[in-house]
Every structure is written in C-alpha cells, then in structure tokens.
Length: 474
Image (cartoon, rainbow, N blue to C red; front, side, top):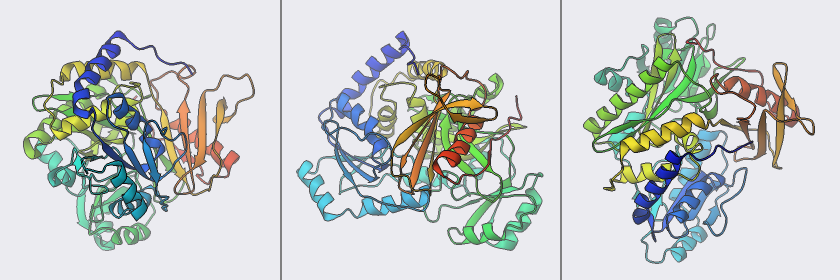
C-alpha cells in the first residue's frame, strides 16, 4: 500500500506547528495514561520529537501491535480486563486512580521532583491526575456535562440546531414504552442512558428497540446504569461525525468522518467498529456539517468558555445531518484524521489549545492544511474487540469474492487487510482498506462488514451477519 507524497502545504504546516509547540513541550515530563499501550505510541513519539523527556506510559492493557520503544517511553501495563470496551475503560480508570505500589514507585523514581503532568489522549478517559501528577488540558465540569445524552438536545435547541424529535424520561419501562410509541418512525427507537455512572461511548450502552420488540430487556439493562433515558427515532442513514477546533477568536471546521456503525441481524445492540474518512457526503451536506461545527464551536466558547477539539456525532438522514451527541473533547475521529497527516502533531496541538497556551496558531492555515491532506489521503481503520480469545497476532490480506472477502492468494494485490491479535476483552481486529485498490467516495462500512464476516469463518469470532447503514442521501 503506497504512501501519499507529502504536499508542500503539509510540509510547511508540519514545520510551522512543530516549531510552535516545541517551547511548550521541550524538556517537560508527562505521564501518558490510556486503555491500550499500543495506541499511545504515536503520542509518545510526537512528544519526543518536540524535545520532551521520555514519557511514562501507564496503560490498562497491552493491545495488538507494536509497543512504544524503550527510547520513546517508559511503560507499565496494568493487565486490566473487561466484558466490553466501556466496562474495560471504567476498570482502567479505577486502576489508574489507585496504582499498584510498584507502579507508583516507578513513576516517582522517574519523576522525583513531581513536576510531570498527566496527559490524557484516550477519547474515553476522564482527564484526572494519575500517580499524583496534575492534568495538562483538564476539562471543566461545564464541558463534560454536555456529553450527557439526556441534556444535549436542550443545547441544540438553544443554539438553533435542527435535530430529531426526542423525549427524556425516567428509566422506567412504562415511561420508555410510551415515549417509544410516540416517536417510532417505522424503524424502531434508540434508547440512550444518562451519564450517571460516567460518559457512555462506542454504542455500548445504546439500545435499538426494533419494531416488534417490547423493550423489556432494554429497559431492565438501562435501569441498572441510569436514572433517565433519552428516546429518539432510529434514523436510517450514514452515521457520521464532524470535528471542530475552538480558538480564542476562531473556529476551525474539519472534514466529515464516517462512523462504522453496523446493524446485527437481531437483538437490541448496535455494532460500533471505528471511524473512516473514505466516505464523501454530498457537497451540500459536507458544507452544512462544517457550518454546524463552526456554529456549535462559537456557542461552546460563548456559553462554557470551551477551547480545543470537539466532535458532533449524528446521522445523515433523509432530512440531512441530524446530530445525536456532542463530545467536547478529543473525539475518536481526531485520531483518524491525524492518520492522514503522518507526524503532524495534531493531537498535541489540540491539547495545547485546550490548556490555554498563548501561541500564534494561525487557524486558517491549520484548517487549510488539514482539509487538503485529509481529503487527499483517506484512512479506513475500523477496529473491534471480540470475546473470542486470540493469543497470536497476524494479518490476513483480503480480496473480493462476490459479496464477501476471501484470503488473498500469493501474488494477489490485496484490497484490504485484517489485523488480529489479543485484546482486553478476548481479542481485537482492525480492518484497513488499501487506497491503491479502492476509490474513495462510497461508505466503507459495507467492506468492514465483509471483513468481520470473514473473521467469523477464519478466526471463529461470533459477530454474525452485519448490515451496513443505507445511504439515503446519495
């Protein structure tokens, strides 16, 4: 799979923002906590490239892939398990709040004067101190409150953002059924719990109550984790997000990101498998989404003093893009967008903005560089945990076989790859499209569904038949 040549614009932007950030991070020490150690390698290398001291990585689990090198980071893995990604994340957060004595001692030896800062880059993590080190780019409570799905619709209404109808009710079966009956447009309803027990993400806590389902199981599940639940119609269309970056006097709007949310053949769960930039919405939808990001970014700055990166998740439904949630933090799609930029320090730049570093950020230049590069260099890296225990790491090269994939024969040019290996739930898989064999534009979720079906056949996973969302605005 070929690399995209570095454009003069990206080369200029890399040089500028690295020079801009070097005085912020140079010779400073950071604890890098996260769910998966493998996923912290890029940030560790970027910190080292900006002259920072070798960071200390404290991760819940190792993950599939290559760990940061010893030159890039000190590493401790806590070996935390979980029943699903959200449960794993919450278990990791508890473990980080109460480190084993040997890990605490190792951090204290590495940072004897206690001057290091905690640098949270994991989208699911709350930015809390780890090992007693204060947080860099901490989020005020007013920012995190807007991530609660039972309060965000009021924010959309205040800002004048079109949205789907919804009702927030107590986590009571009768109240939920009444709301669902009033809102169902023929495809069932989606029930989203409040954030009583912490932020929810990755569709783990959502319940899709389909036509014919009385919702009793979903209501019982949600009553255990929430006091209130938002009910809204299930919206047919492509799940997507739009990211913005809020500065003191500007808002940058990036390109749309497809969310790989697949529909199992039965049950009340949705299957979230990561993000991709393969899909191109209609030009008018793209500009509507980017305009929405600018408007919401301004409102966030005016209402809660927000700064830094945020994302709006939603559905490109028949009416256009309808938001379903707001993430006033680094969203999962930022890493996907950063994947097109090589060693451009996008995540560290967003954290410096959130911290309030007073720098000449040149927002228009940043927007132009990220947009041009992300539009030219598309990324599809759908990932998914599995309860199937995978002890070995490997890769399957994939070629099309009718409506499915098969393993490539020697000499065949693959259309995609499927990486597999161990994970904190049992196993982990990552699907990647080959840009030399796939033209961007159409959604990539159908290919991801094909890859996970192949995993069932080759690895014994139990994903079952997965259906991609239908594009209702072609």
